[in-house]
Length: 520
Image 1 (cartoon, one colour):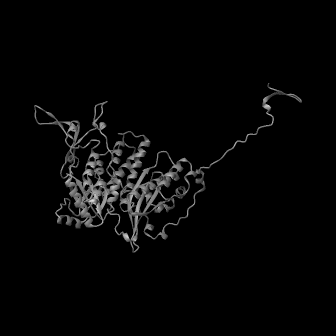
Image 2 (cartoon, rainbow, N blue to C red):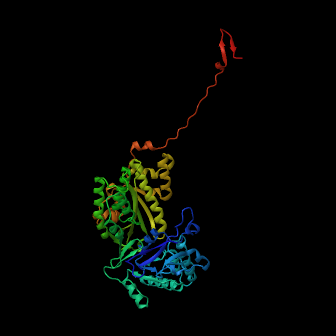
Image 3 (cartoon, rainbow, N blue to C red):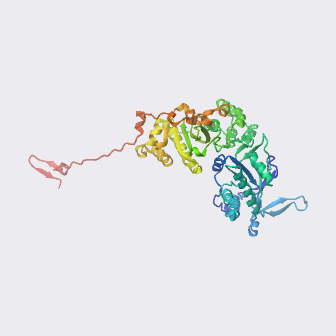
């Protein structure tokens, strides 16, 4: 097997590790991965892990040290994991070695790790039911990001996780928390804390940067900023940069949509991979690159709720949809209320897509934005099924709202298909109209600068009226323009009436005064 070293100078322990290319093969032959089954996907969705990570008041994180290398390979299978190793012996430059542990790069490694952990932790189901549920369903690969509502619950879960994994042959390290009280209790109980609680302490949690002291999260833009130092003004450079932007929760979608639109324009003009960009596109590209440095300051509170009172009732989720000729998408917020009437609105996530190259009418694009919102509705309701009690969807398109509330069979094929999908995910009676200037989804469909994004209250907190009582929300009075009614499918029944004559003249060849001569 070929392999290469991966150097990570930012790591505190193993800065160099071997990664094997199990997909390598001779031309016409099969690779090792071709013979291996991938196995079922046992890891939870990364998006779901991040969404749940922001629910808890007290959170903790940990990492299983060298998780793959803790799992042994059956002796009969080790001969398939042979590789050449260079030696310092002049008489024998290379020796053949074989891996005895699960390696990085094989197709089935993620499944083997997850299945092994699941097998061992389930032995403790009766003794630590909550811990087993956490490790069985909330552990993402070798990273644990979870929490609780109280310090004591968090202490019990984290201590139980360390104990169970230790008995199973794994070491849970790099433990950290946002609670100084939990940190003190762990030290008091003889449990180590390897990450301090300093003011400038920042950790990378999956794809987010977490400031423990402020308990805030943001997008990790370090790979993006490092890549821009050596980037050029070519199509290849632009696409390489866009690929480095990883923002699963959509925090910086209004900024990223600008460069995605730029990529689309580059493709439309047929620019070669290594050719310089035209001047107008180059100016847009350089302007976007200059603004990326501000993204490091874009942060949001890690916990959704700062003043949620459970006695006041459940959480509402509000989803705003919009579209433009550039992009379409949706953004979701939580709305909580205390017993004293104080209301809080909190950003959850956003999702967007570029408008297709084939030009569509704006009403149809609005419907595509509503479809994104409907899918958000369905997915988030599954993730927060015990938390959210009511969901509302908003759009600034009266035409789109009329389609959602009407029968799908009334419309032509494209519109009808979208309406069917939307109605399958949402409750049409909970879809409402809002003014376009007060629709936060407008930000991710048109794009804004990084500086504006940082302090944009409409994007981070939704419209102001969302913090008011329901009677102050936008009045639902809308009218569908007559010209759009032409999109409706009209059913027409046709019937051909056949009039059979008493005498069929065509059957006769010659007509005489009082006589008729037949063809026969």
